[in-house]
Length: 193
Image 1 (cartoon, one colour):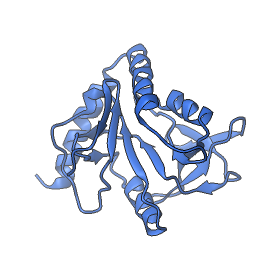
Image 2 (cartoon, one colour):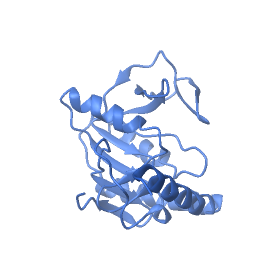
Image 3 (cartoon, rainbow, N blue to C red):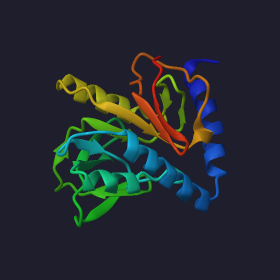
């Protein structure tokens, strides 16, 4: 089995476990993860932080994003522009949100494009070494590479449910490793790939 096939298999198994969580349980676990994030994720006021709006059965980072906003963060969301590109548009309270595809919404084209220095990232599978499997398109890996090329080394924090954990996920050269993971059971700095 090659690396892509192995990732696809792990993704399917993990997403099935995540999908099996009842909606009310996902809400409670999202709030538990938020409490851990509030306690452990530090940043200065004005820091640009990218979050995400949940799709399907993803963990919900919106309560955490709201806490970060209250602490002075400048928030943005990833917006898929095409098959290979995402940009991060500023999320301003009260601004109109538009359909951005893939079952989610976000800031319109009028919103400023930002380069986040901290990303709260969705994923399908993770390990505690910093390995992350997304949804297979590589959007985040390419976007993060572009940010790094601009001289910014963003902190990458995956946010997911414990049931999405695997002992070890396969890693390819283009994969951007996580600095930490945030789940309902805690905040875990990566052990290194």
